[in-house]
Length: 384
Ligand SMILES: *Cc1c(COP(=O)(O)O)cnc(C)c1O
Image 1 (cartoon, rainbow, N blue to C red):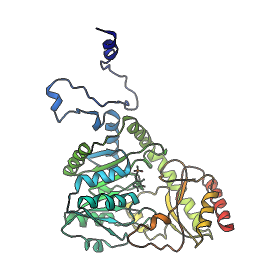
Image 2 (cartoon, rainbow, N blue to C red):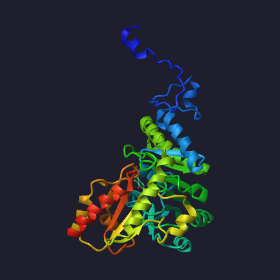
Image 3 (cartoon, protein in one colour):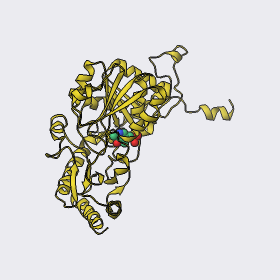
Image 4 (cartoon, helix red, strand yellow):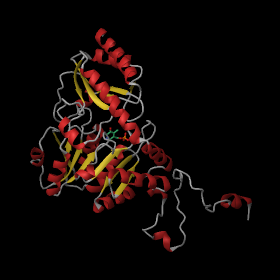
């Protein structure tokens, strides 16, 4: 054979690999099948787009955490939400979405689902289960929950809502990113679709995007799988490897976020500059009873309402911080802060917290150093 041919085919035979701790990062678009009949055998992996060794290992590990029979992986957390909605909805359907949902979820409903004849009603997270069920019509196909809510951290009675929805033939989907799949188990509480932005705590290092949808419903699982094929989405072997690496230490990292977050939250409650701290693990939080009934812990993300103050003072607070980075996303090992008021303007039900809202992500740093950083912020806030 010619050298060009020999270089293309040399060493292409699979060799058996030594067994190591982690799955191989198996990169592949084409999957080589053993014979002609296997090319069209639906029971075999025939194309790398469905994921090879490391995505498969990640799916199995997430299924273990979620108590799921099926886990589907998506290229981002938002893609997990939109992919799940596209998989189960059809023209003419209506969905009920909690008004405190992650803002890009709302954007997808408003800008994309409407074009395909799916309408969205936003409901108040404070509604009772009965009040929420009063919004269900014969067209209602799905209720989208997020608890605690994005930015404002309201708790919802998930088991009651899931049971009432099921009795009416309505699917439930929860964005469970805050609990990281560890501190709340949506499927055990009757939810149909448990969604997580793995980008946050599972990744844990602010360096990788991915999302997952877990379910115990075989019919829904097959709709999710079909939609992945139909939409042409895939996750890379390297990213799945990175996520699996994060997952291995999740149950060690998350309790530290819980402790640090709560320590900073309690300290903030006593500050004269602070009007309210929005954190369901605080005993005086309106969502505390539901949180302590259903959740086994809290992550490092919560809200802080400052006493009424100018935008200049809020900016001065944030700009004085040295340890807290200013940036979106969260769930990494490092602390972050944002101001939230521009996002609250998009809510269907007006939110008035009586002062500017900040969101803090408390990382794994020492609490006293974080407090010293926040002291710097308060000093700048007072003099602005
Ligand atoms: C970040 C986030 C997402 C989206 O995750 P990406 O991977 O950034 O797309 C979804 N839901 C919540 C609650 C989030 O915080």
